Image 1: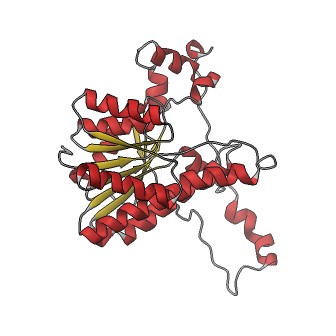
Image 2: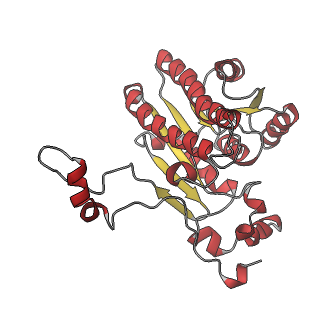
Image 3: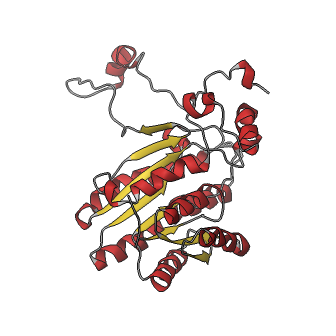
Length: 305
């Protein structure tokens, strides 16, 4: 597999997961447009790629507005003559419970994650269609968008919305040869570093050691680099047949998430009145109600801190 001659835009790629994605795309041969809101962070990211013999340029701008999407595309065209791959990774967090979340908390997260994904994909997909070129759209989701999470109304809505858009774009862009997929990463971040449950994994990572098998295998939790390979693969010609999918990855584990499907189907002549539901709802739904949120397995005693 090679991305030689390809050009990738990676939003939110100054550090963390986004930087790992950009670096792996560059290692596979792609030229990369780095994006961050901090000029020095973006410059440092470019330098890490160039130090390994790769090609990169940077756009310093907040993702969300159409103007930023236009700048990212223009940078790819000016620096490298085209674009083939878009990875939408930029995001922010404003975690609060529903009753404490302000309009600004909600709008800020939706603006960067959901609107930012939309504006960037619209810009790149429009260019690819008009140029008659195939392409790869890779959007970053989250387990929170798949299952929900306490204190993350805004983030859950944005990430669930991203997967919904990906399924729609897979339909709309199929004839143009443009794939659209979501990746659901489970990896150590600045957030997980402060969670006691992950302490042993974080400590191992900080020592430059492999995380314990419980985290990497049982929990499917790993490093940013563990996710990067999936990004590069989906960006390749080898993955031309994969579109409209949500793929989870972390540690030693990869998962293909199902699309929402009915788990119970029943019919009642004349429709489902209140009385009909009172009579039959327990029989229909008991034992079939779906769980919400994530439940982690008990932490082995030797990994407890």
